[in-house]
Length: 542
Image 1 (cartoon, rainbow, N blue to C red):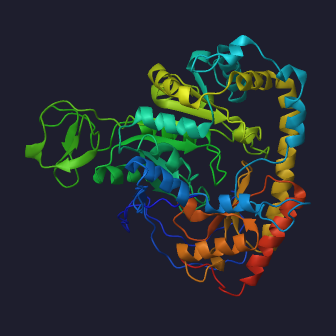
Image 2: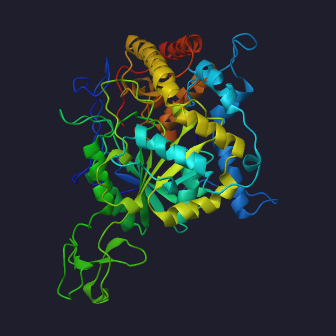
Image 3: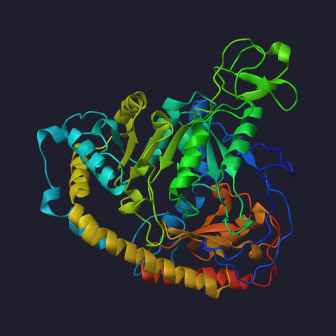
């Protein structure tokens, strides 16, 4: 993954959400394991960051447009480790010294189950309608099946409607399409960080939309808090900061379960985030002396002006504030990526889809996405779906499906798979969860044996690992050097800066692989870390 450059953001030392990392604790029931770590010095972290994906762009091609050159630059600067892996991929027989991939989030545990099911005779059907142009939203038979599937597994209060379903080739295309139809060029989405870094490309390449990072940190401040916890206060601070820089924020992206943290949001947390996205802006409670509901006094004594086009809250001198009615709500779209919703393997972790909520604060601006890439281990098949009650959004995204659609044959296979509730409930999900849990147990025990702290919530395919004590200095340059040392020792991990983590030294380690590859991969991880174990006694400050 490439690194997203950020503008420097102010870091007030006494404001809501301003925190310093003071080490992690293991007594709060949050899945965090901490052993043998020192206490780093306090150092405040940035509260937010406005992304500028092309800040480091420096090369042009005489054969490409400026846009084409930027797109090529994204390819050249991204996925270095993934491309290296594919040139030297581990194979037990043909390339036993090749690279073990513990960096790419794929489920490689259930190919035997999937191959048997996808090879059955009911999956093989060819008829004229499957070879012709479909409805760009997807064949009706598939959208009906998706609506029934999501109604059941998301536990929706009422049956979901097929007219609210759009199908296309994966969540990457969905992010791209939603960014293009919801935002003007240069506008932005809020996103809690660390986050799956490829979303930066998804929203930028077509739509030229940026991300405003809501920075989370590892500090545990009490019994009711957990590492990297998202709060409404942090969202408010990031939104206010982006507005102060003249950046129009149009939406909020939530990943649930979260990647790379594995966090699962409670129904109460989801409601809080959704209410934040809709609610009235602070400081604009009612009419001011002009009788304008969109104007009020800011902390500087100026009037807060909410522009009807830009929508940014900022201070203007009173004499410049226009005397007409202005909107007073955030009115942000909320995109909820639930691509790991069926990969919650710890029974004690209760998962709640956004579609399970009784009342959505703003149903016309709430959009849920899901795909088979993760939950069904089919990242190469490319199937994703959008559920939205907003027909304008559904129609606009559908228009882009002519570039991101699925073949009729794949649509038929997906409908057959999703309707086979007996196989999913009795065969696939129980075995998949058991294998995920066993793999997670093995890797977490290995990390404990090494005295390595980590965050894991019992969902997804990965563990968020704290390797700060292995950095001679708390810098991203040192983090990259450690990452390259792993790669030189033929094991691929994902480094924290690729997820916009602001504390150097965190890595994502994927455990959803076969036992023999996991064992070899962890042996190589151990070899690297034991070779550097005397570099630093304590975790460095961040």
